[in-house]
Length: 444
Image (cartoon, rainbow, N blue to C red; front, side, top):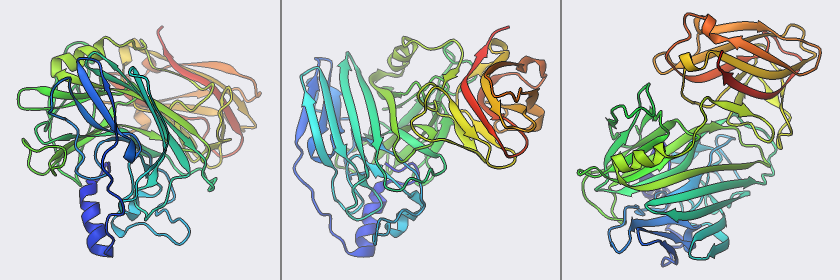
């Protein structure tokens, strides 16, 4: 489950370092869906995590369950780092993870508590109280929910975190696994499209399957990646809200089943703020097939012509540096308080060609901002990160009313290629508030 290290090593280290035995290893209690094309199984004994995915009628399961950090499961990260619950401190080797509830159980072998489950033969729903992975028998102050449906060779998944933390601090944004996916040994080749011409049938890439703790990371510019066998068949993961992926392979590739150590790892990723009372949702698809079939499924999905973020009810993956907002829930607009000099808002990662997105529109209201000289930065596949040379300034109106600011990014000779991220600095100095209803690209 860890983006940085296989939980297998955590279990070993915890048992060696503390003398704790695994608390509870019950026999699986499976709930199944089978549509005649694929067969999906979740284990109700461990939070309803996915522990089986195969072709219908085939006993070859793709999902690895060597330890409770594998499977296909939900996992979230936030502060503080380290996370201490009362007198309970995290396992030494996991101190750096902070707050980390996961769907199955903790590093000491205590499993999640299932609250609700439904299976009508068409859709499967589970709700659980997750466990804090690094701590000894500490439930998360939150619930996890997932809804799974089958459609031909595809698993459609929707996931929800509902937080109820007693600590009301809004900690810095963290990279989330949306979700974490582990396959068995034969599925060891990582395939994705990482180029600057997404959705044009450009050539895919095989990425290095680095071992833990140095998992690989890449921009999957069509929002999917796959773990396939030597013949090119396996499991694809598509998350329409994720460009960044992490993944790799642990131990010797090419062989091994669900109870064996060798495993492949994939996780669509986004950097997200998690309020103490947030409801966070995402969706993803698991696709069985060849690389060509997995990619064809992604190409059939609807997508926006240009990226657009409307902040009617959530942050849309945006986060802050040297600024904060009024917290969850978001109502009609982000209300960003400029608490320090050089405040900034950062977008999630995306892909848009500069030629097709010449104008950025910001629908915002500046209030009590002494000098609202806004600045927009952009990063690209070819030039990651933010530099003054790749930015444009504009003057905001400090009257407190909403205005649409149209910034012609194409006026800059540095605005070119595949744009992958934005940074919006509302002002140079601390003080005041900017409310933002929407940010979107536009044509001429």
